[in-house]
Length: 71
Image (cartoon, rainbow, N blue to C red):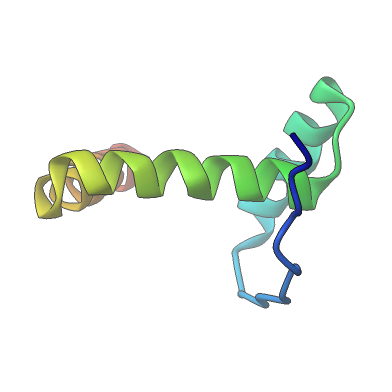
């Protein structure tokens, strides 16, 4: 069976410097590109969203607020 990959498109987003550095560290540790790590994390998040819907985002945002207030 031959699989054809869909043509890739560009998605530009702005993130804070700390998150970028963390993505670079993960990419280095996994010997992957930052783009590959981002795509994997986005796919994982989309899969979780498809499974749990809005509850997934609410839990994630709640977790971020707690971590932000702890600093």
